Length: 195
Image 1 (spheres, rainbow, N blue to C red):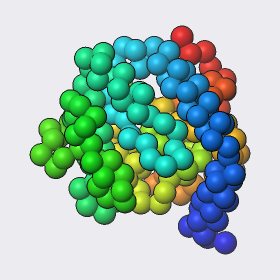
Image 2 (image 1 turned 180 degrees about the vertical axis):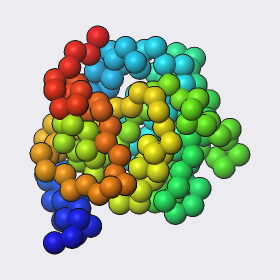
Image 3 (image 1 turned 30 degrees about the horizontal axis):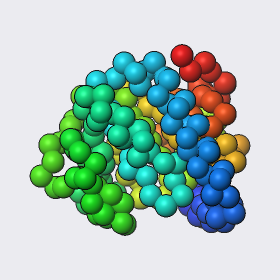
Image 4 (image 1 turned 90 degrees about the horizontal axis):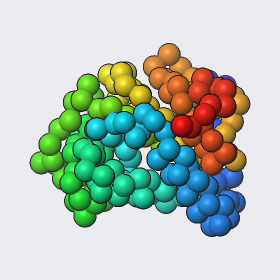
């Protein structure tokens, strides 16, 4: 089996598992992950934050997006500009987000572009990951391209029940040093203190 086939198989496995998770668990785990994130010193000290706008059964980031805006910090959200490429774009209100590529909420095309070097902290999605931050995304390469240019703090959000120890990786796959679940923070695979 090739790495690509292994990735596709794992995506199917995780999607099937995710479909079996109860609404109560989805809600409680999202709330716990949000609370943990808000306690992270790197998050609290960040002036410009990049965060994805969640859809469907992903970890709910909308409370995080609201908190960034109400705290007066700069919020940027991904805008898909072409296949496999996205740009961080600043928004000042959640109402600016409208369904874009793949139905994912995106900022308008005229939103200000924020260069990755200007971002202090990034909140990233995954289909699954291991505790060392090797992630499996949806397969478009959007976040790997972003991570190849990004140098500041980043955290992956993943529900504990979706963590896997064996993640098929290829040379272009960029790991993320922090993984945040409802049980807490992992740094390079080791449980870490949040604050």
